Length: 400
Image (cartoon, rainbow, N blue to C red; front, side):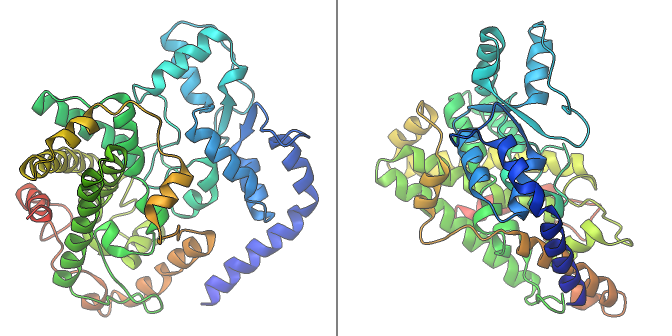
């Protein structure tokens, strides 16, 4: 608790010290008429968030959803691939995250970049379980998700490709985007709900386990089944876009299963921040390649099971509509309507509380490992040995 109070105090002190710069920062993001500037630095959005202003981030997030802006790094990659001469703005590398308004680019580069949106080469966010989009830049920092390793969005895209290669059925670029984008959303709407992340619940104060491994697995399967039910209900309403969204939303849990293997949130925090953790970087480095492969496998398998379920229920036409979806992505406002009455539950406070779990876990796990470590883990006897057949069985049980 002392550590939490200290972090909050430092954050508050930072806000006071930065108060004088809030006006200057706002002017770098918004014009006098309230429109977004052509060049947006994510660090400026963090400053305004700590100044207590979230509206510029909300406006920019909506602009990203509308594909009005793209990361400089991705634009630079497109320019190099297409052999288009272009000099990026200053601070386009290192710790800065710069986004450019596509309308401000020369027509050739603008059109080439827009084309790459449909292929997945240009994304609306950086990688990591939590996307490091400016709206969540500070949250991504606290959650140790600033890595450029592939996260839910990228893994979903790869799994969708694997499904297409196996079945000779291809989703349109628009459908692929809706699925992949939705795969990240449980981190925003259900950050505090362990079953959504294939995790075992822990006590928020002591960091000790609050349920058995078997109870947690049942809760995870119940969560997945409920999300799939939402997708099939959408098909029954003849709403293929919502069906795509909930199918992609279900990706999150099965992908997290490959990375989390049932660990608690407290253990996850220890792996992120603990100095003695043997699995440092549980989401971004430790056994990363094997976990990614497993998560891709689960994504493709879930799609195949979803297709089978819909056809068996006489809803093959909905699956066909999902494959051929060619309309706009789902906006944040539309997502919130779909999620009602659930609201977003991630915040800087929740990230600080998450980080504070590392200390009691570090202090207690050596003397009483049975109180802190999930046993058995969901996929294997130890973290270095994944049982692929067991992983596949979870997808099968979701659709039973």
